[in-house]
Length: 395
Image 1: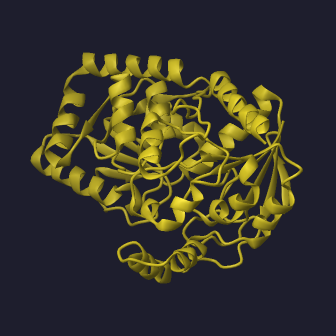
Image 2: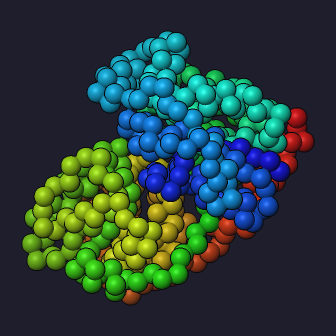
């Protein structure tokens, strides 16, 4: 089949869960399914400003043809935050919400025109993430061929009126988790639309050369928990910093450190026991997780979390926010992690993980088995193919 993914950012240099997810699926469709895969995306790398940083209009990466289009209006975060504060907290018209969506970005009319003019070229269009201009303004032109991966989770924007309309457009849905399907069916009228029954996600393939001891030696680290991803308010990192500082205050004999791997969007507290390594190589990412006691993810807004699956595949327990149904669901289904509500449970979970070595190892083994059972690339790609067949037959 000839397939076109539509996603706000795409590339090796892009740091973001939904974008990394799109790239992995696209590349595995080529490698395992033999499909001709294209991507319509923007020239942005940074999701805050949407500045045009890529200069090449078309290139190939791991068998996938990438079409990049310029962003016509970089985002002024201060101005956008003021607009969001009004649109997301007070009643507004659909016209005002569409202005918000334009400002949300990345605003690329050329990308929309490409999708519109390519309707008859591709068998299916796969739209990734409900939240951005690229999905909202392009999907309406190819409704009959659209497969929608909403990456939906509970947050203020999903309740805007414009999304009630948009969720009616696609021909089919691909959900990353059962929790995402449940939320989508609760909020939107999607009855009768083909879907994958929430049995989705990404496959996890661990690279060779993972070196936990080498990572510890390279960065002079030993006893630590690790956070991987954007260091951002939206990922609840300020809460993580507060909780960790309180933990060390209440447990003064603890030598545990918090290691961060990811781009700093917000300032990281200057403490000897918080080590921010910035955006690291894939080798260091996997080796760092393998070297850790456990992975921590405080985010309340996740639709899958690739890094949680990667940590489980590496045999590491995870500690996640119970306020995120998806993350808690991973823990319940796998018995490979703990989830917390509030500081006191955060502290209790850490103390359990660092003092129960046997249980820690058993959770790690449970995680390995969970990922191997439910997140195999060949089976996941077959799921996409079944959904694409349904869309083609319905036209």
